[in-house]
Image 1 (tube, helix red, strand yellow):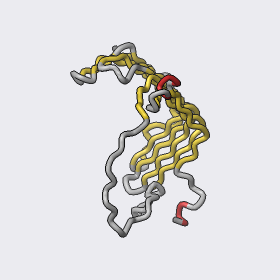
Image 2 (cartoon, rainbow, N blue to C red):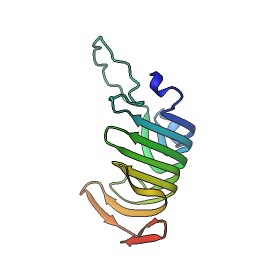
Image 3 (tube, rainbow, N blue to C red):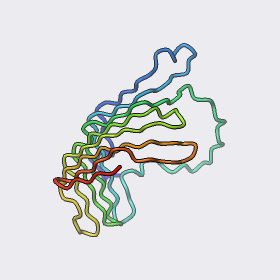
Image 4 (cartoon, rainbow, N blue to C red):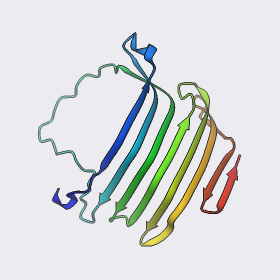
Amino acid sequence: TEVFEGLKLADVGRLKLGINVWSLLPEKYQVTSVTVDDANFYVKALNNGKANYDIVKPDSAATPEKPKTESKFDVQLDYYALNNINVVYDDAPSQLYAEVKNLVHSGSGNFSNEEFDFYTKTSIDALSVSASRIKYLNKTKVNIDFNANINTKTKKYKLLDNSFKLNALELNAE
């Protein structure tokens, strides 16, 4: 609506998919990596209930459900990355505000295995969070190395070598 004129919900500079070339032969594309570069997201909700993410027009006519078809994509993700991501979340009804500047995050692991090691690295140049007009974080520099062994069958998660750094405060966990 006009209230959100000029406010983009999402502006993505580049989306890159890595596809196993050999998977093209049986016409089932195996996506092995996903990278998003230079993206800005702005989520805004007003006190009157309007939100900029409510972008689907109401459908007055009920449409019959389409039969499901098999996808030609097989996600066998080994790596994903977010580079230079900026996010603003401004929710007036809940009085919650968060802003992330220059998020760089990557993760790797053989997600198709039942048990695998999952490695992530995250940095944020400035993280600000406030709730009910109280600032909890104000332009805080964040660095996180989060690593875990994951067993999807038994639903067991084991922390490996991890570190969390907010400005000069560093916490380590194993």
